[in-house]
Length: 103
Image (cartoon, rainbow, N blue to C red; front, side, top):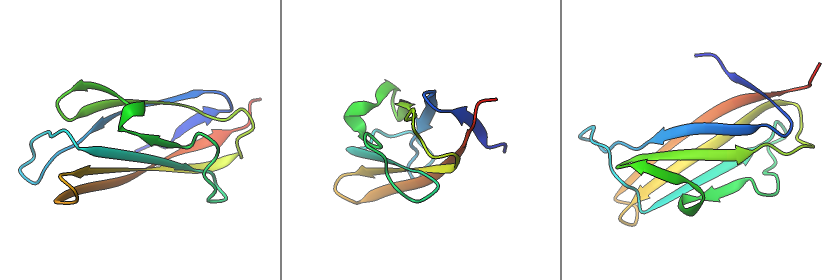
């Protein structure tokens, strides 16, 4: 899998799918998305919740996030944590992208 390359001011888009232990899509009660720059700092606006995402089908959500125009160059991470019924089912996954300097 290739790490996506982005530039300052770009919009990062990702489709998120949430599966339970039976491999069926489910709708979480909560979703938290936390972005961290290469220094491990969460920028302003770098924390999203379920209300910041667009649901397109059961267990399927569209994430769109504007990368800061002054973002730190390097490898960024974002962690997605979904919870169903107060912790009875928790899915957590981490994704990465590289913020590159424009030529």
